[in-house]
Image (spheres, rainbow, N blue to C red):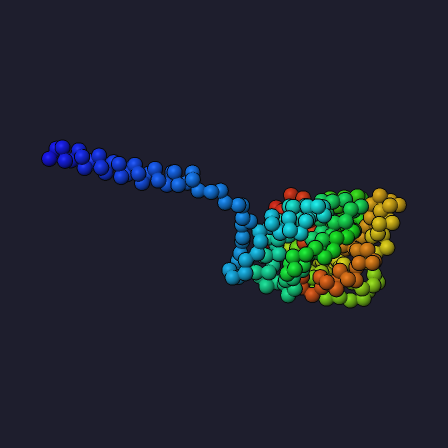
Length: 246
């Protein structure tokens, strides 16, 4: 009986060792699989997967086009927030203004989110009191003549003193919600051009509006009007500490 118990114990031990060893050897013999881009899902629709931010950033070749990865990631986060809150009636367009770049570089990006395509990359002015070459001071205060950061929803168009223009609604309280009161709109301007940059080394500045070159202002406004997301980015700790969206 004693011998049978020891034999049984030895058999059980062998079986246990076999169960432990098989997965170990199988894992080592398994062929290496190719890397697959991860997929994330919009929170309001688990049936419509989209590529993750890194893949989309690469697919659109945005690094080569000079868009900050941080600007893109934050823009995507805010875009989803506004979309989920049903603030956007035009979900196919995302516009990013990257104020981490100087004004003598093209720093407005218009992205078609349906076709996954970069539609426009162009110059954009900042407010005269936000800085000269770089925009590094921002305000929501009327008569500050500074740019305001954060997320906006585009509204309707009108013809004003700057010609064909686009109204903006600031979505961040205390950060850009005075946009309408300050008449912060998208319009064209003579001082936003390659020739101005060649002569001065930087763009002319607005009273706070994201002004565009005359040759592309109208088509861009027509593309982004009526309820699309606009994100004005700068690496500002003050903004990030106050933004409810981010």
